Image (cartoon, rainbow, N blue to C red; front, side):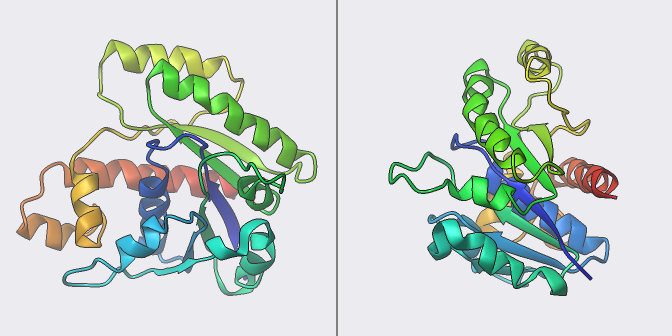
Length: 228
């Protein structure tokens, strides 16, 4: 067993990066894979999320390696033999210390980079900086696959259609699956669970979880196909 490392990254906050990382990991776990979630963001959003469970703990191991900084690749490598997938939630922002960017280091050992971004022109323009870091990583990891993922989408809007046109200008592949803007994603974070936890969400009558779960499962299937 040797894990595929999946880096979920974007320099812009509010892209849904942490939401995608946790839900993708949960979906892969639900398909029977041995999955590790690595929180590389100093905010430790995923660690706090996993510790917020009010009833049933997440069936995922979530660890923080934010303190490893740009040596994180050495720490992640220790877990590769024990897992099928390692999903890394990379930190946003740009280093001002002169050190190598943490996302670049993670991308250097990743098989797949997922760049989630919102549908507004500002979100899409800001992605150019992240793609520059991807290009740096590709210099020493030429097998890296990079896909853009449209998130926080309101279906059928002009913004959605225009976003697809703007994404085409990057000449990077885009996931067929897109993630709708749903309140349930915020709710499940506070409950320490995911939209895939059907029993809990049905009992609590959290709206939108069923179609949200379907999109997450479709994303997971795409990821598996890309890495196979």
